[in-house]
Image (cartoon, rainbow, N blue to C red; front, side):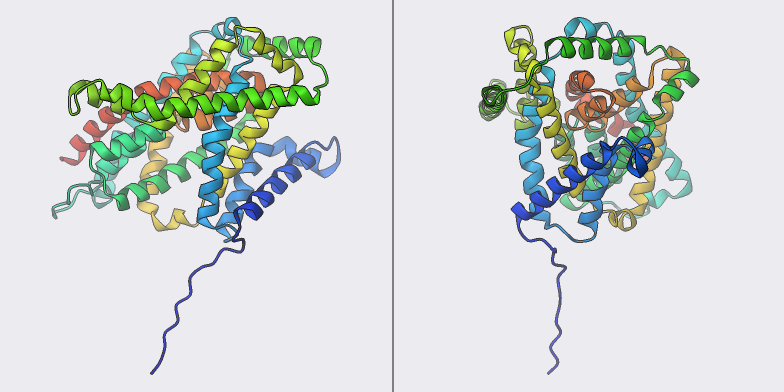
Length: 435
């Protein structure tokens, strides 16, 4: 009797600790080579941002089978739930409200341009494929089961691309999207968003040329960077052991408070209104029922409050540098979850997502050209929608660490409008397919 053996793909590294050690070694190597002042690496990093490699090298290692999925998930969870709020707190604590306000109305305008690009981009992409490949968007003679409608699945992407994970989850529940379809959309969401992230990071190197072509005025951004750098030079000192204890103690105490709030706030707020009522639906769709939403909100709010006190002076001993380290660990953990082969398994949805993203990008650049907004506002305004609090400060900090709070503030705005925008997108996409 013949015995059929089945073999499962086994990751080369089985340990979470070893996986994390490898990722940290990769980050160390990237930043060691990027700090070289001459030679091959100096020329290489003139064209390829270091941050880009922090995404792609972990992604390539994951695609090659180095990591267990559980290891990547565990490391990402720690990075997103503990290091991210700590980083947001440390970066936002040094915020200069007067200078942020001095950036002007263009920052908010570009954020909403990105939101509009997502809201109308989805229906336009569905409309295009309704003509050239109707089956790709669910237009068939067969009855599509509840929860398997493509437009409903795309609504979860809209929630993610305007607000974030909390809004994405809200759309899955609202439209009863099946787990299988939701998983497919999540893959498309990540792949398309990461391709755009790569392009954004690459164009940062060309931002001066882009600003010149668009006749943009980036003087307010340059003034903010110069002011922060001057302030740092005049007040910076060598950190002592006690300083590091204070920075980490304060940051993770705030993370603890944020997690405590995330336990009680969702129940308290949603429990104060009748379940199933309009108020309950609105609060839940905004993200008030999400623990992660409150972790981000509370950690950022506490930083904004303490930034008006003497606590802001911990920047003098390098608090933003520690916050930036946490951000880069998060970046690598996101890269670890990327599987480059998935692009071929779900190519139909991927093409819909690409067209959708192109519409978003076109609207961003058209609006930026009209209002003469600098590339910084394009990049941060887009990622405050597509990526939210996890990536908007990363992109902003890639221009300069002092600009990270701009990404945080715009990303929080995304949480507030994410579900409303996603519902509007879903209604239009449903109308296009005749649902």
